[in-house]
Image (cartoon, rainbow, N blue to C red; front, side, top):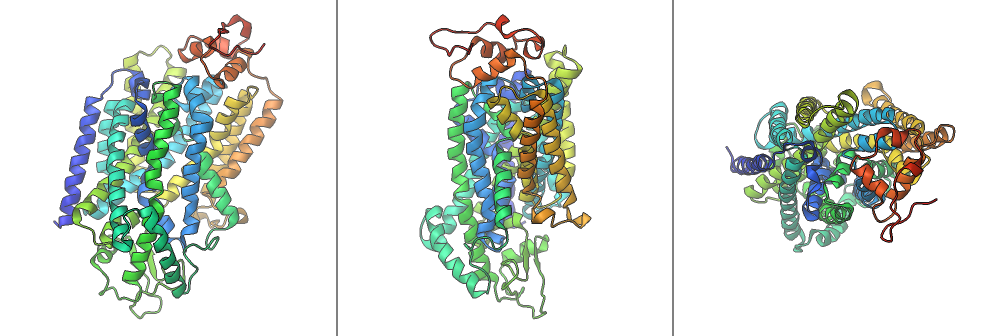
Amino acid sequence: MSSMQTWTLVFVVLTFGIYIYIAYASRVKDTSGFYIAGGGIPSPANGAAIAADWMSAASFISMAGIVAFSSNGYGGSVYLMGWTGGYVLLALLLAPYLRKFGKYTVPDFVGDRYSETARLVAVLCAVVVSFVYVAGQMAGVGLVFQRFLNVDTTTGTIIGMVIVFFYAVLGGMKGITWTQVAQYTVLITAYLICAVAISLQLTGIPVPQIGFGQILTELDGLQRDLGIEAYTEAFTDTSMLNMVLITGALMFGTAGLPHVIVRFYTAKSVRGARYSALWALFFISLLYTSAPAIGAFSKYNVINQLSGTTEAEAPAWYQSWRDVGLIEFNDANGDGVIDMAGGDGLGELVINNDIVVLATPEIAGLPAPIVGLVAAGGLAAALSTASGLLLVISSSVANDLYYKKVNPQASEARQLLVGRTAMAGAIVVAGYLGINPPGFVAQVVALAFGLAAASFFPILVLGIFWKKCTAAGAVAGMAVGLGTTLAYQLWTIDIYGNAEGFFGIQETGFGTIGMILNFIVTIVVSQFTTPPTEVMQQLVEDVRYPGRTQLVAAHATGALEEDVLHGERAAEDEPRDTGPDERPGPG
């Protein structure tokens, strides 16, 4: 076993041991702890957990590769703009109000705000989005094990499934949250050590965000010398239309992701949810401002080390990644020399986007312990998001479907059993999808964001800010948004021969179109269908204002019954606090 494999094994065993211990120490015995960690997580810790949950394998493993190995870095910037912009949108526009509404899950909000039919449609949307998203995470786990521990992708994915099964099923949201705090620590430490070391090596500047500027100038010159567009040139491989649509799908999809939204329910209060968002934005920015630098550093090193060499002359890292099938050399002219001129910026080389961050320490010649730490960081990123997604699937089935529809009299123990069983089943399906993913990690994840944008974002926004949005409108909007987007994504898969799509719109950007259709259908149908009850309209009004009226408090604690929220009883039958410290409800 090489020193790199030894160090990788050391870090993997050490970090996995920490995750399992945390899960055991945080094990829960009630549904509140299982679904929302009892609503008692401090803001800094919740912010770190949100960051780990949201920064998936796509962020850690794949994003820098997209930025690096597009024909330039500009096309890959849609992921940076969309994901970070979407988080700000979520933190400011939705999270505090959803937390104040006081339910466990997004389908729970949809069911209470609209109707039980809408709840069922929302459960379907949540499960579809989460399964597509988790496929990318499990594929990332298999990729790391494949390269660094010399096991096949299937075996690596199964190992990841076993670890997630243990701490997610045992600890629920409480165990997952504290595990994700540890996973964030591992992934950000690995990422920043790598970024700082390479920045120092190439530029002499220890701050990668600053050293990045110097390398960009040199990289532009290198690419021009190879006869391709400058690295910073705009719209060379992604049209302006697709830049807008993909950025929109990622942004609005982020604001509609059920596994991220549920994180704000784990905060101690609405104020805590706001501070959690602030902490999460800080933690996220540490990685997202470093990713473009790592992408540029990697491409600079790849061009300098490989362009004009033969495979026999190539460095050891090239041979290692080629042996596991993640680098290919297509010798088009038969001269045996790696020609990186033309094409997509790599010429005769085909490099899997998902290897860039994992390979960067080797490419830069960093010590074996750093290589092992980065591998552990990639696993932490994938597993943290996978566990959050699996909890969404579990809660959708156990809470929103079983408890709310099938057996409302179920005991706490029964609900926990159903939730854990649902999670175990979801892990098996997720593992299968990870072994057979429909694309590279970030591409699969981007499809999930498009589905979230098309299904959940309009319904959440209108549910909070338009009190007359109706149940029929919400059901129709979600069905049209999810249906059209999923159909387009499936239709544009290469096996059907429709990869170009309509007007050249990429499948990763169609979620924006689906979202617009959702908004239109929901608004139009709401104009011609029965409006919500006066109680519901009053509740929507109260949720948007500071303070906590009796109506909001009663709803958050479950004191409002179904016939009050959605039945015929008048709003004036319900108490409203009009004291000096609260906003009186409108007359």
